[in-house]
Length: 289
Image (tube, rainbow, N blue to C red; front, side, top):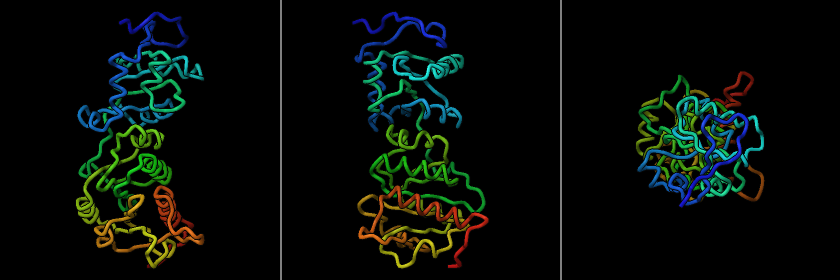
């Protein structure tokens, strides 16, 4: 079966890129599809980044691209085609895909013509280096990649010093985590470990553990979130586990006036993190408790 064919030249493309993979059965396309599976990511140590902006952010964060895949027909801005030339000049494999092949490899509903294969983001507690008085976000047993990715975007925007997945259900390399995080998974210090290990690590760093739960008596706005603090949010349905409740120095709830007594976990994390940011700012009022 023929998997490639000659195509017209495009401006700003790397030298020698006149062949395009058109078959959805091509081994490279199959390899990209396989990386949607966690067992394949764990076995190979790789994942994919889907999207131009996400790839650019990863590059800015120092991530090495192992292979770049692009489809000129799907690229709306011709100026962006220069990325293929930039990557090719670094000695990285740059592979052109036809529209059908790219659609098969991409996991987005409306792909923009860019995919990159990269090593999985690092995720070890022992590799995290915290500054004095750190702000850490801990997410326990989050199931939905979109929620975990959204928390990473919030953490990056708020200047959180590290994000830790405790007893992780979803891995950091999940392509939907990468997508939902807008690539910030590669720009933030992150780690994964069982809850017990995370608790021990936080205690070794001097972080005060603050658990967010709807049944807490104290409001988050009434509790001091300055200093070395780890804010803990729990799984979508079960919330934080008993291990975290027992380990917490303080349990707090988010002020709510409506009939629903809980928020989406990513929203809860955003509210808690930015309350901590407010308190830590020069003009923020700092509670004493």
